[in-house]
Structures are given as structure tokens and as C-alpha cells.
Length: 119
Image 1 (cartoon, rainbow, N blue to C red):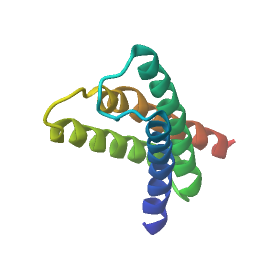
Image 2 (cartoon, helix red, strand yellow; image 1 turned 90 degrees about the vertical axis):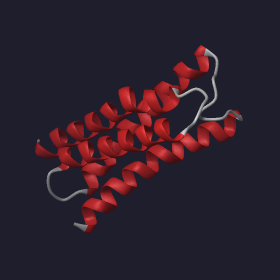
Image 3 (tube, rainbow, N blue to C red; image 1 turned 120 degrees about the horizontal axis):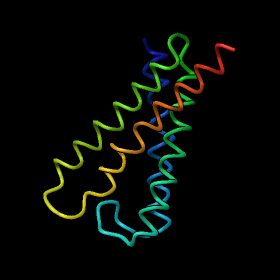
């Protein structure tokens, strides 16, 4: 059980650290409106790191590696949904993209890792 929690936490850390790093280096607010080019680049960046996070969670987990990618996807979507609900105003593009694009990428990372493990 602790290994499963650690696997999902490690996957989320990879995803969240990449997001924090991107917004810190760009000097932009995560929930502020942004130009379309920045939104697209951020979406690709987040999707890649969500995929890596799902892959990592699946590899750290001993049993059911694909499920750990799904657990990470649910965690990403849940935190993003809370962020949408909690922010009183402003642009909610980044949490919505996290729900629609990045959470499925985390799940896909887990599935790809599970397939590789079973070969």
C-alpha cells in the first residue's frame, strides 16, 4: 500500500514540478489568461510530463502498473477540478486542460509502462 501511494506521489511530483518550473521560468500566472501560443506550448509540456509521471508511477508500483497510471490521472483531474471550483474568477484554461488532456496522458503513460513490463 505504501509503495502504491509512493508511486502515485512520485508521478504527481514529476508532473507538478514540471508545471511549477514552466510557470516560474516564464513569469506567467498559472490561472491568468495567456496568448494561444503559450497555451499550446504549456499543454504539450504538461502532456509530456503527465505521460512521464504515469509511466513512473506504473514502474514504481509492484502490482497493477496500469492502475497506478489511472490513479495518477484521477489525482491530476481531482486537483484541477478543485482548482477550477476554488478560483473565484479569472481564466481557468490551465486546470481545464489538465482535466481534458493531461489526466488522460498520465493514464496512457501507465498503460504503456504496463505493456512494456508484460513483454
